[in-house]
Amino acid sequence: MSEELLHQVTLNGAGPVHIAVIMDGNGRWARGRALPRPLGHQAGMRAVREAVEGALAAGVEVLTLFAFSQENWQRPADEIGALMALLEEYIAREMADLKQQGVTVRFLGDLERLPQAQRAAVERLMAHTEGGTRLALNICISYGARAELTRAARLLAEEVRAGRMAASDIDEEQVARRLYTSAFPDPDLLIRTSGELRLSNFLLWQLAYAEIYVTPVLWPDFQRQHLWEAILEYQRRDRRFGKVTA
Image (tube, rainbow, N blue to C red; front, side, top):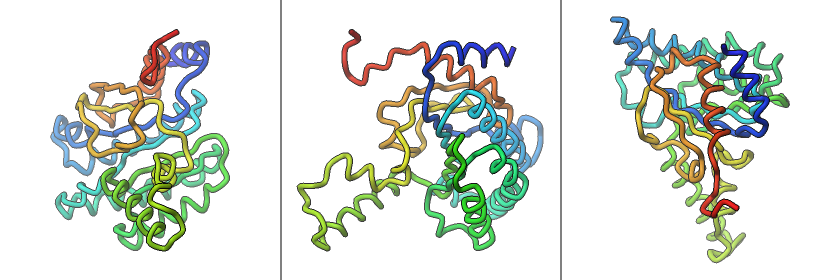
C-alpha cells in the first residue's frame, strides 16, 4: 500500500518543494500506553527517520521539523533534561546515515539557550552533514516565530541606526532575508499531527500561503505513508495565492 502511495505521488508530478511539520502528540501517545512522557518523546524520535526517508523518496527538497519551542523551556526540568538527552542520542545515532543519504542538517532557533553538551552536538551534526544535496533538513529547536520576527526587526533597526540602509528600504524581502529560513523557499505544505488546529507560534511569516494538512495520527505513529498521503492531498489542491484560477 505504501509503495502504491509513493507511485501516485511520483505519477502526479509537481509536489511540495518545502514541507514543514509540527510534530505533536508524543505526550498523549505515552499517556495512552501508561508510559512516562519521555518514552513518548523517544518514540517520536523514530518517527523523524520515517519523515526524512519519506521526504527523500518523494523528492522533497526541504523538510522543516518543529522539535522544541521556546515555550517548551517552561516544562518540568526532568522532562527538559530527557529531551536534551534524546537530542544528543538522535545526533549520535543518525549522523553517519544522514550524511550518507545526502541530507544537510541545520538547527534553527535560539541555540544559545541549549546546554553546552547539546550545543556542541548540534554544531557537530551541522558541520558533519554540510554539503548534502538531496535534502535540507531544518530542525527548529528553542524556536518561536514571534521571537524570530522580533530578532529580524532588531537586525533591521541596527542596520538603519548604523546608516547601512534607510527605513524606507525595509520591505518584505528585507524582512525575509533576516529570518532563520532565509536560505529556503517558504513551505508549500504544513503538516500537523495529533489533530490539533493551531500554528503554535511556528513559522508565522513563512506559512502565509502554505497549504495546511492536519492528521489525527500522533507523531510517534507517523510513518512515511502518512507523509505521502499529505503530499497527495496537496497535489489535489488549487493554489491561487489570492488570484482567480484561469
